[in-house]
Length: 226
Image (tube, rainbow, N blue to C red; front, side):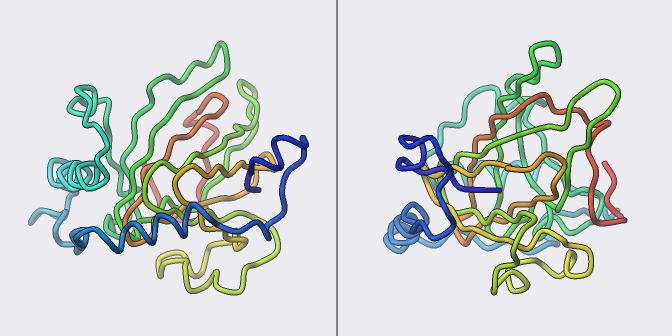
């Protein structure tokens, strides 16, 4: 997974990891001028039956949108806007919200928005080639907040500090970059493992990709189920 910069785009090559994370720094500076975003506990999202309370989870994301002045479009009040805890029961640590605006198998493209609460992780996963689809390729544009992107490659010195407890034993993607608004990261190698984790202000991210097939999706954590 590599980061795309203006210089890289103009020269037609991918920039190296030494490029300053200006968007992330700017987002951090701007966050200092805002009131603190509410900190959630895992128990905030589960009922007495131990099941994820979807309404409470969505309410937290609406608060995130309001915090970042992201428009809550009518479609985000429908069932097209979904939330997941990946069957781990640790939504505050591992979970996400998302919407597929379009996921076209015939023409092979996807437009997807992602919401992450502060410190929340999309678990490590990868997309394989099947008899029906090629391995998914994707890129992400951070719109609000900051987001850590983990990929396979040379391990970053602070990777183990960023990866949450639930993934300490299974995570293999330990090359980590931090991105902020306006910055793009691209999955560089098909079928490679990757994950995301929001910074303290959460993250709102747009993904552009080839077709997303649930049958081609694999997770590193053995207990994840959808």
